[in-house]
Image (cartoon, rainbow, N blue to C red):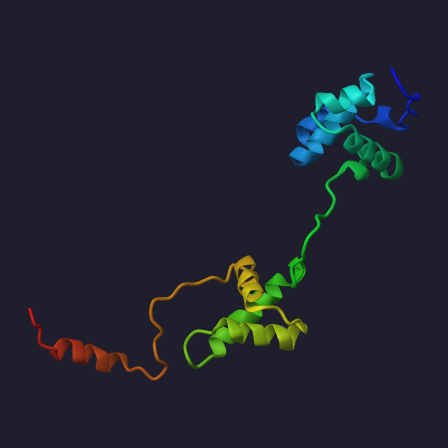
Length: 169
C-alpha cells in the first residue's frame, strides 16, 4: 500500500453502520453509512470508496465531517441554490391571506399581480410574477377556471334568456 498510514476514525465502533444503511435516511445518506460499514469491517479508504462507487476524495470529506460532527456529519445537509421567498412555516399564513384576498375581491378571480402586491405589503418581498405563481403552487393554491362570472351578473335573467331563445336547429 502506497502513501502514509491513515489515522483511525475515533468513535466508528459505537455505531452499527450496516443497520443504518438499511433503515435510515435517503439513498445518498445510506451510501455514506455503507461506506463507513466497509471501513469498520477493515477495508482501507480506497477499497471502501470503490465498494460504494464513489471518488476517494468524496469519502475523505465524509470522514472529516464524521470526525468533526460525529454521526450528524453524515446526515444530509441543506442543499444549495435559491431558497423560497416564503419559508415553510409561513406557508399556512400565506395561504390564508390569499384565500381572504380572493373572498374580499368583488371583481371575480384574483390575478398574480394582486398576489404580488399582497407579498410586497405583508411580507416585504418583491418577487417576480413567475415566483408568485411558484409560491402559489407550493401553497396548493392553483386553480383553473373557464370563464369568470361578472359580479353584477343576474342568474335569473340568464335562465329566462336561455328559455326564451329560439333554437336554430
